[in-house]
Length: 238
Picture 1 (cartoon, rainbow, N blue to C red):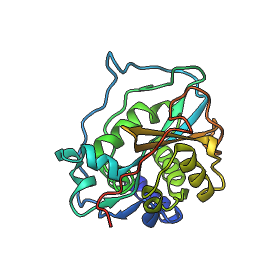
Picture 2: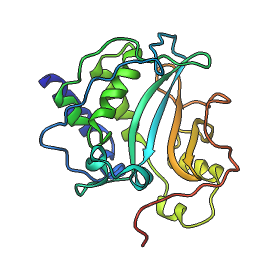
Picture 3: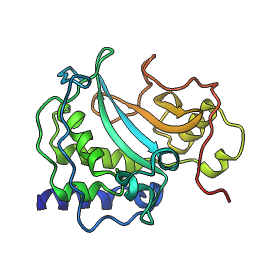
Picture 4: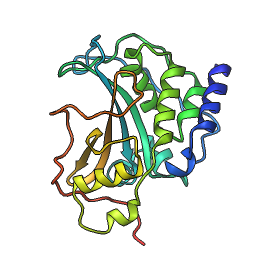
């Protein structure tokens, strides 16, 4: 456990701009919250399938806190003096066809040090456990490698001026163009945008089979059309 904690801490320190870019204000908990086991069930069954690529999913936290931030489980993310921009939802292996692998192996609870090291990136202990159980176990990686890979991808991202974008009429195509301009290694066609009632919810970024390079997303794999209108909630207006 101590080795995992040290290695994750080192990865966090090396990730460029990670604190300023994603966690605007975040104080990690002194004691990591303890999740409950995350297991397959009838609606989310085990599927052991080949990997055709990866999706890096990031969540726009102001919108999450606006619509679902009033539960005790969301207190760390949406209260307690913490403030986030984008947060790391997870790194998902995609399938070759329409279905994707999930819950590929039974897994114990993650070590507290691993959860604590992720909380200012993925601000929910239960989500961290879920991401490893549902997605990480299908990658062939160890928990250490899986979370290191997620941290490095997430930490390398840069963002357009979200405040400016939120103030005027905006389409999904305009947003993906602005995001791609801030990230020369991420082409606009590698970005899928999801929204709830027109408000920005998540970005799903498409990666190759090695989770090393951003590639064009496959057709019909989710996301809004480029001409769809998009609004961005940024919290308190100034």
